[in-house]
Amino acid sequence: MFTPYEIMETINMIQNENLDIRTITMGISLFDCISDDYKKACQKVYDKITKCAKNLVKTGEDIEKEYGIPIINKRISVTPISYISSACGNHVEFAKILDKAAKEVGVNFIGGYSAHVAKGYTNSSYEFVKSIPDALSSTDLVCSSVNVATTKAGINMDAVKQMGEIIKETAQRTKDGLGCAKFVVFANSVEDNPFMAGAFHGTGEPECVINVGVSGPGVVKCALEKVKGADFGVVADTIKKTAFKITRMGQLVAVEASKRLGVPFGIVDLSLAPTPAIGDSVAHILEEMGLEKCGTHGTTAALALLNDAVKKGGVMASSYVGGLSGAFIPVSEDAGMIDAASVGALSLEKLEAMTCVCSVGLDMIAVPGDTPAETISAIIADEVAIGVVNNKTTAVRIIPAPGKKVGDMVEFGGLLGKAPVMKVNNYKCDEFINRGGRIPAPIHSLKN
Amino acid sequence: MKSVITVIGKDKVGIIAKISTLLADNNVNILDISQTIMQDMFTMIMMVDIKESAVDFYKLSESLEKLGEEIGVSIRIQHEDIFKSMHRI
Image 1 (cartoon, each protein chain N blue to C red):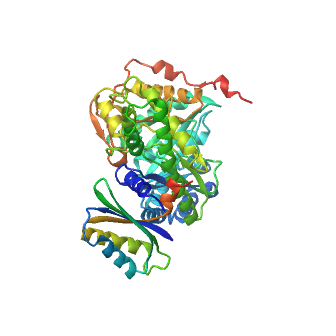
Image 2 (cartoon, chains in turn blue, orange):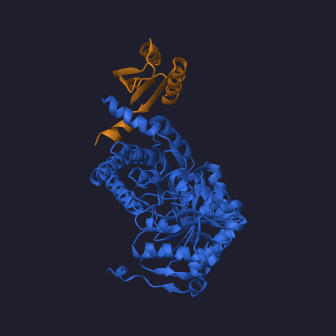
Image 3 (tube, rainbow over the protein chains, first blue to last red):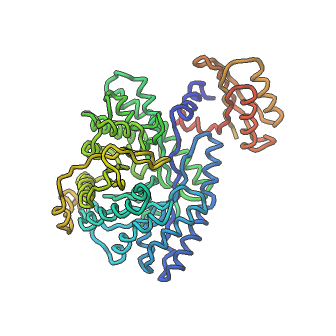
């Protein structure tokens, strides 16, 4: 029998501190759908997704009821579509069929309209990347990503240049630039990430797999409230213990979902994922450590401690850990970040520094609508350089909100939240971006 | 299957009686029961076995929730594994 304290601790975490399972994501391989006839290929894609994920949402809801823990999202990731559509073209048709299949099975996002071009384009991946604004503006639930750099290959600067243009075009073609919230540019992207918008089912993944993303910034913050003024050893220890408990929930749900769906369990992603809800903010954890506002001096150190302690606590709680596994710092999806950016405590430059010590990157950041494509490309270049040199994943999800200026607010709604438009450096970087070519892989990539 | 029922709310006459009647009517066996006052709130924890239950888990959960609304307390039932996985290694 459990003690009343134990029972109440769990219930309190769920009821008052926003503990939840952020996502159950089913990864589905689409390699067996390849055909030189795009209509045939699309039909196979639709049939496979609707067959594999038929019971995904229902299973998630059943687990939610039986265990009494909310499971916020049920999602699907698929093999990067650029591989599947390469033999037949008509890339956007695949986006539309993904959207249709996602709606049929009732998931809230489907990820994998993706390409990997770190070392260069193939003829078809070039055409595919060009189709992204079209795909994002003609679908509702499809998420897209492009990996433009790896520590092994270096940075494809031609792709980085193109990304700025793709983001600008997507912003123009979707309301308030919302399409850009569903598009991520990666360095060192991971194959088993369950979180959107960057999820895809990697080429080394099995036929079908269940990956789970946990959450719980509110629980960590509440635990830290109880050790006010204690030294950092105590802070790190408190976070570790809390992360362990949170992750055990994720492991339980992952194993149970995989058993019920008859699909192997892949990984639990240890990321602390915030939402715009009050009491579910990563920024507020950093502030609880003693910072007046997230973004002030000391923020990077606080985040480094948090990120490391979450991993140390979580890794023992799950049999397989993977995905991005680190604290997320999306501006628009975190009440504390929104507040800090609105009052000017948090700048783009500080966010960039913070991404050196956590996952995943410059995430859900709104910038003025008239920001030039080259500037966006240069922001991406800086961010992927951090990933490449530090041998970690970094990403950029940036929204040049049409018609908006610094200080305006862009509303995305739901989990995507709202973003204050942030200031960018207005000095030009066109000549740098227009050089093109590839930045070589760093020396420490030569490990063999 | 073992489950944990938790009841939280303002203390009053008949809470346990009403809940155990509902459980008995549905052939749910009470294995253990404890009650305490935590942060001024009446807190009751019951371990039950629903293997022989006359209704499925979801129906039982619904009727407990409804009863909770009637008597003005919060009643929830959860699979014991959620507590096991968080508090036992």
